[in-house]
Image 1 (cartoon, rainbow, N blue to C red):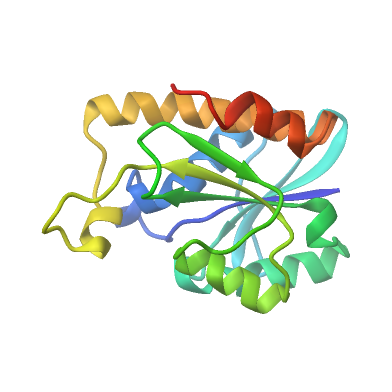
Image 2 (image 1 turned 60 degrees about the vertical axis):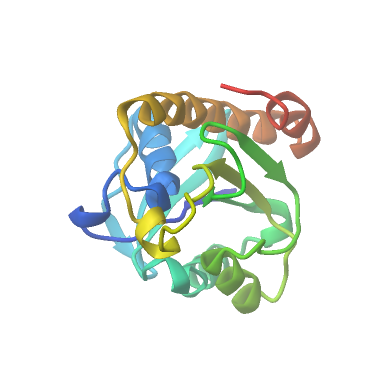
Length: 190
């Protein structure tokens, strides 16, 4: 079983923002699997599906970004999933160009408060993370305002392609392993 969590903030005002790209990938996966993310459990919206024959729980934490670990800890414990073996987390990354992916089997939070909280509460940094490039904030911009801002149409097109790649990478991780996904998607430019 896999728990696949996209990070973001709940509420319509955060839809289609840089910070919510994780939610966008989860929605795309749900569409691809013909399922809905509507069950309210574990401080999250969840949906269940099969990807490449494996049972998966698609998760959109509703705790706001900086407390995402509360939801994921509850879900991992409930489903008896070892994060190292079965957790994938999709998040935004301002250190990557728009449309770039960076997949890793473990590592630091890299300054991302949602990942920081997950690592702290799960007491491990060993879980797959798929970072979605949303571009560096322009000089003089407030970081919070930037990540809570919306994409322009050109960026949105690049992000939609990157989200498709992220969905394909998730399937490749399930059918093969994280190394295969890293080799195929980490250096790819959309």
